[in-house]
Length: 252
Image (tube, rainbow, N blue to C red):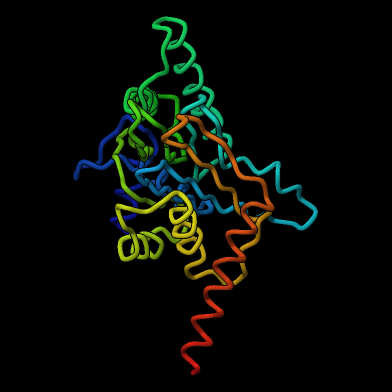
């Protein structure tokens, strides 16, 4: 009881450190990310794949209205986990930074530079009174100098570059699957397959083309695009067919 009272004394303001050096509001923001549906990023030599879980609360909800994938610039896309409204604010900020770079220097913004601008913006909200941290994490994928790049942002304002990473619910199981199955020489198609199989880990309901979103940043063209639901469904069908073939082989 005494420990709980001590915590409550330090979690009412974002600018107050606890005696053990923690910012409780930032940790609460991380919990908001964990409650969001999963998003996965996989980097391959051919480009970067973003796969998101677009579970809907009701069959009456239009799936296309679920905002989990975002185009930031022609060569950059992002996926989110956590509070959708917070993600939208950060995406709008990232788009603004991208346009400023094009107007000022007449060239696309670097993916690392863009990520740093976003995380600097996030970090400001961890040290200003009267505000709260952003309850969202982003996966920022893009092409820089012909090289695919994949970054993760955190509510604390830190960023890390990854070969493959998951954010949102069930992150531990998905990340473990990615660590076991990832190969540096994957094609984009293999990357989509890997991300969808990872997303399927521990799920009770089956994946569907309408229930997932897939975005690709192609290294050759340097452009970001999202797959239509029927394209996503074709990848899911291939995974299910491969699983059925494996089950038949095991029975034999």
